[in-house]
Amino acid sequence: MRVKLFIAVTGLLTMPAYAAELQVNVEIPRLNVAEYHRPYVAIWLEGADHQVVANLAVWYQMRETAEGHGTKWLPDLRQWWRKSGRNLDLPVDGVTGPTRPVGRHALSFTDAQPQLKDLAPGQYTLVVEAAREVGGRELVKIPFTWPATAPQAGKAQGSSELGAVSLAVRP
Amino acid sequence: MKHHLILAVALASLAIPFNAAAHKAWLRPSQTVLAGTDPWITVDAAVSNDLFYFNHVPLRLDGLVITAPDGSTVQPQNPATGKYRSVFDVALQQQGTYRIAVVNSGLFASWEEDGKPKRWRGNSTSFASEVPRDAKNLRVSQSVGRNETFVTNGAPNKTALEPVGEGIELVALTHPNDLYAGEQAKFRVLLDGQPAAGLEFEIVRGETRYRNAQDEIKATTDAQGEFSVTWPSAGMYWLETSSQDDRTSVPQASQRRLGYVATLEVLPQ
Image (cartoon, rainbow over all chains, first blue to last red; front, side):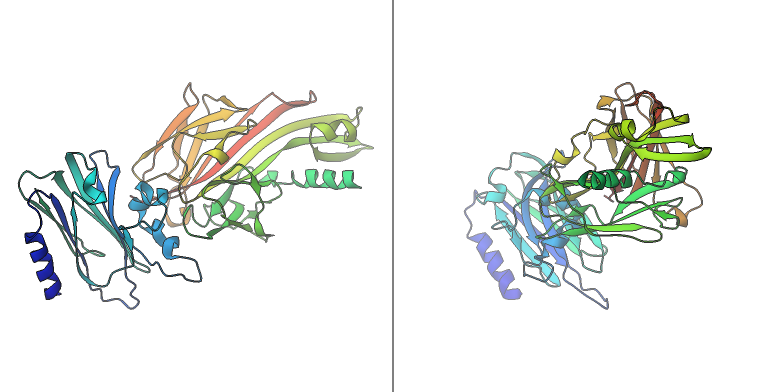
């Protein structure tokens, strides 16, 4: 973990100065429950009209099962499914991936990456939604302005299925 | 022989419990928003006072029509009718919206023959050949009823929702699988394909057993045949209207009864 963090920080320092960047930290909390399954998580950006402008990450069970792919349970990510998921051809390169364990997960995106490349200047909201088998569902939001003229930071605290969620936008 | 078989099927399709008119007839899908490689749903069909509990009579499946997202008709799987409910499965092999409807339309006649009451059910074609022209005290009525629900695999579409043009139908200005608590949904109501003004709708959320009142929502279609409803909370909703007119298909029938029921699932935000 510490090594990873170190790499992430040095990676930042060596990045070209003009690359605007979005850093997202999502904590999957440790839960004291009898039956635990890793949550499905969707992380996306919404415009002022609440439409999805970019999917940053979707974590779900990608392994084949008797019931078919884990796509069966994707509609449990209710808002994401309604706004984006149901219109996607899954899996999506660079977006979808397997479920993640308990802990803090750092993601970063530059304006050179496809997720942010076509993002017009304006007001946006980072949305993180999590849904867990035999568990609950939670959604948190952090508003921000893109591109940032000065470094911005935002925080949200989940209360059940998500822990601390933070966002840093660098000009 | 073949003719008889067709007739038998046509007659059977009309055999819905009309004595249960005061009760609520409903279809209840196990879920309405699905995804995956081979999703299935199971649907309960019953007639009862309480929503959505089977405690009176089953809803007969003879008039069941399942329209797939491409507009074709698909067959139900594992249909069965028990004491209190009918049940069937639907394999959602296509992406898009399925319309699942029990459609009952036909003529009902009663008359006296040799001092005994006779009853008959059929359609306008069989009416001419089966009901005696000189029937004594002939009473004929017509009914067109539709009871339906909607289920979507993947992204919703509207091909299956195209109006058939007979009886009362709902044109979903808001997609019926895109309903969320706190949001407004808008519908246009058609009668024989034309916008129907002044139709009163009763809308009741399920789980009536766990509260003291029906908490029904009333809505009436405006001049354009439209009404809207803002869903107070998530749940499975039963939506009903009925009407009558004199647009019968045979002159002997004086009145046509029209009914429409939809079961709609409203999801939480």
